[in-house]
Amino acid sequence: MTIPPANSAANGPAHNAAISPELVAAAQTSKAWPFEEARRLLKRFPQGKRGPDGALVPVLFETGYGPSGLPHIGTFQEVLRTTLVRRAYEVLTAGANGRGHPTRLIAFSDDMDGLRKVPDNVPNGAVLAAHLGHPLSRIPDPFGCCASFAAHNNALLCAFLDRFCFDYAFVSASESYDSGAFDAALRGVLRHFDAIMAIMLPTLREERRKTYAPVLPISPASGQVLQVPVSVVDAEAGLVRFVDDGREITHCVFGGAAKLQWKVDWGMRWTALGVDYEMCGKDLTDSHLYSGRIAQVLGGRRPEGLIYELFLDENGEKISKSKGNGLTIDQWLAYGGEESLGFYLFREPKSAKSLHVRVVPRAVDDYWQFREKLPTQPIEQQLGNPVWHLLRANGGDAVGGDALPVTYGLLLNLVGVLGAGATRAQVWSYLGNYIADADPEKHPHLDRLVTAALAYNRDHIAPTLKRRAPAAQEAAALVALDAALGDAGEVATPEALQNLVYAIGKDEAFGFATLRDWFRALYETLLGSSQGPRMGSFIALYGVANTRRLIAEALAAA
Ligand SMILES: [Zn+2]
Image (cartoon, rainbow, N blue to C red; front, side, top):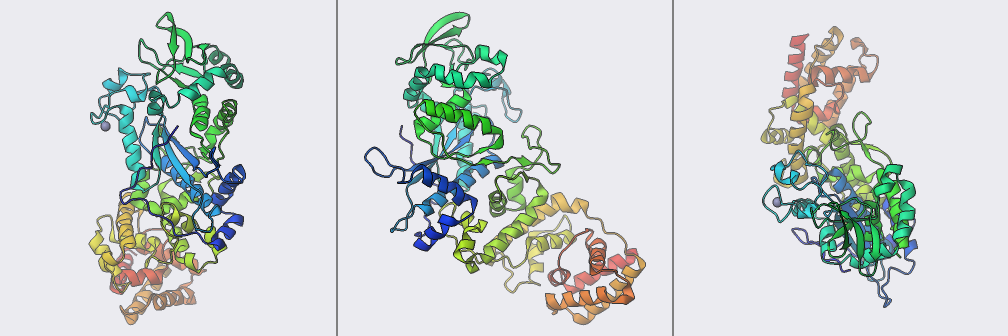
């Protein structure tokens, strides 16, 4: 079947710069996981993927989407990671013209699935309740704006993917079934009905075996997707027999009158579309295996693909959308932005990752560290730098080298002392103490992080901050620090201020066993937190006079 052209993102797909022979050579031995994955595709197609006439045809990457809910962080990670493998394959196959072999990514929506239950986050639940069991694509849109419930959710998926400028082609299961595009593959399933049953039956429990069929006819009587025993009458004509509404009927499965059971559907789709690469979560390991066997029976081939670990919440439990643990993508974007999310998802896809708000600040600062050092790295190391992959994901170039003038951690400390009511303008006025051209227009990345820091502080830090009173020896050290700051004045550099703080911590007169104890005392009495920034940088940013005021407040509580 033919696949529609890619949706173009708002500003049109960009193109990566020409791929140099040095880059191709380095990619061949790179241990970065996108290259390891892409090399499996090289083995799959030693001469490149070619059509019947011998010409190169696109290697097909697929990501799947169940359109009964909103796109979420899992949707993003799968499309992003698949895109990174796609780009890596293009690098590995680049020829003298600096371009890789053709590739396509399809975002496939399982919108022919029957509605299992009425989601509680949707209006007009009665509309949905009246259509339980019907294909999502044949249920009216409860929001009242689209042709069907599935169309509504599909539009949300595309808007979501376009927001991140992903290059993909959207394919709908119901359109593929309804148009007859899957008819030939359905015929194959009926021809090989017994072989498919032989793969599937041993995987099912006794009860389920009695009703299982690879084909799910759609009842002409009720419009529901039926889970009933089915026998094949005539595979070539697409005819099957089953009991519908108490009556045995013969029914043609073509043209949207049936869909396939999940694992069969997946294997059929791989075969019909010619999918070469699809990753999936660990929970689908078995599906991937059995769907692969079914694809083989149908004359296709199981795609290559990474099996990634699932996300855990802060208690180390699996994230479940229904339990509402974990973190939503909008939360991450609000507290850290897209780059840090991509960075967090890039690393170690085969290890379980915790997904909760407290991982965000570190991911932001790590992302920028890797971005800053990218151009100074030799090419082999660049290929292992997550930022190299992320910058190229949607057609950009892996330049990097720019840096945040203030770390996100320091920004959070500043906003922390300013309190939950701090404003963007206020933060920028403090940034003037620290950077020469403190203008949001000149630092758009930093400006977005200022907004993010305000939100993160308001929601997650401010409620936890509680300054404690200094002990007697800590109070004496604070008095000394105040005096030293008075002598230093506002023009002191962060380094000079840091040295001055060190000197007091090391002074035996104040009795700190380690410098660490002194810093903890500063954090706990001035900032209300057990951890904190490099104090010299903080004082330079917050201002010497303001810091002296914080010290005075702490001393007043002693
Ligand atoms: Zn709608």
